[in-house]
Length: 404
Image (cartoon, rainbow, N blue to C red; front, side, top):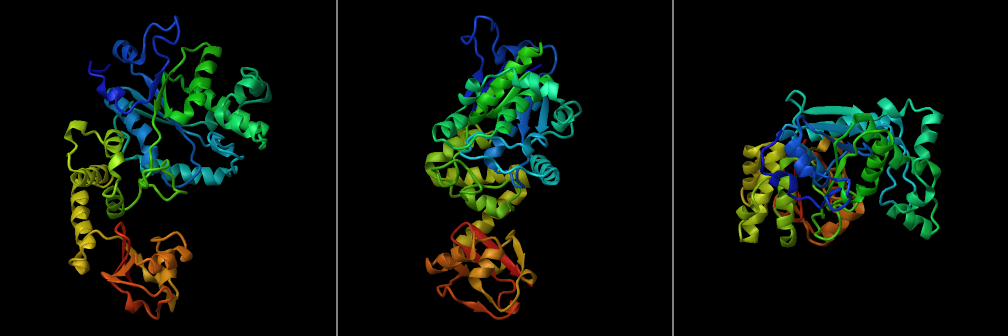
């Protein structure tokens, strides 16, 4: 089904399991399976729509899924509309809030829209979008009991998150044990040959293998991909840590964040977020940052937009030609009741996380209005005309044009 060059498969991979050394019964690894298969492989990737925004960290397994599509295989995207209502306990030190079906449905629609620039939605037989409520909502008590009987409590407690909570005497609720079983049962329902996931999903993927064996299917391969470090260079990319780049961000915001990628992350970001050969990375870190930003923005907004915002970012940073700077996202002052404190406008426009944060940014000298630094944390704007068509800036990464 594929060519003999498997660099596409192994790029950015942390682990493929099982491999030839895992078991005497394994006679072929995934590379050999891709080469020998007489049919397209069914490659599964599940995602629970528990929020509204996907970020570049989420894009990594979907980029690998696209690589499988480009090699002629079938991508199976599992929208966990049923499992999202349970909540994945992976990495959690307490029970997750359960979502309503309405929340899940709305989130699922936004997720799919954000994935369109990554996956091939148009080529026939290259994509199946499935909702696991198709099979999980119809499970009766006898089937659930059968699934529960495939694992022991000891096996569940071997899962790192459960083990930590048990050791720390934090509550573990019985419905949470259902999550890895139901996520694993997805692999049975779609007869997956391969499942993709982050390194934190190994337990869940292994459960899928065990259930496939139990139900008489050939067990899937697991392909684990790394967890992306956020733009702070320290912790994993996360919206709650404000170190993320959202897939639906405007082009200028995306470019401005990526242009400041820490030097220590550049090789990692190029490998995981672009298709460029690592030999093409410029030796000069500043040039590498700009190339990375253009490459990633081009994937989501097009090359022309990426080059336009590159020019705009330069103008904004140098405070040149601000009035005519292109591609700056706009914020309508109709959303603000005047008179209003500037720190409040910073908050409602999304430039800062809170009004308190807005005050701190002003006091720290990070806020500019049309290039002029604002130093009064209590500055009051009487009418929208005082701000109309001006550019409000926080630091070197965040800009908006204020319109009335």
